Amino acid sequence: MIKILFICHGNICRSPMAEFIMKDLAEKSGLKDSFYIESAATSTEELGNDVYPPAKAKLSEKGIPYTRRSARQMTSGDYKKFDLLIAMDSYNIRTIMSIIGSDPEKKVHRLLDFTAKKGRDIEDPWYSGDFERAYGDICEGCRALIGYAESLLGSDFGA
Image (cartoon, rainbow, N blue to C red; front, side, top):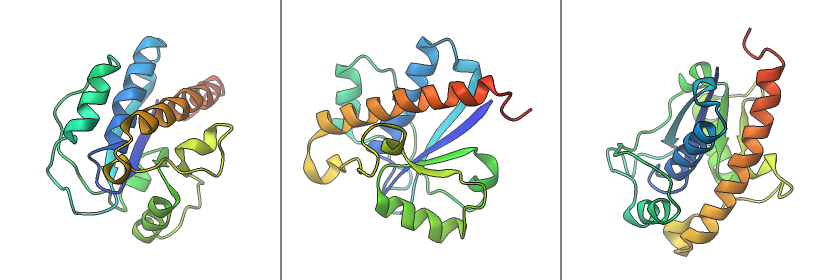
């Protein structure tokens, strides 16, 4: 089983969208039981809040199921608990590193680094208002991440 934690600034837009998109892709790929997927924030600004309404609306529009959830901040303990810590942008990476200290197991990545768009951040739709672009980028990243994870599963990952 591969344990993935998606991370953004507030855990109300990008990271929960990635969580639910990835869960949907895993389900449709027949890999649901191969993954444990959560999301978290780097900040404390939105703790306890549910997914931002425009993010929920975009997921609904695209037919992606989601559930009510409460934003939480990642902890240093998440480094041990999860196999992959997937950030939405380079600012998230810097903040993650300040929380965990170091990444000796190379678990921390940006989502788009699994795609041909390496080196590009997923823009925060909280500020841009562009939930369509964020959704497209997140889907592209999650599809590439599923491919990467399948290669890990095929190599007896975690055995």
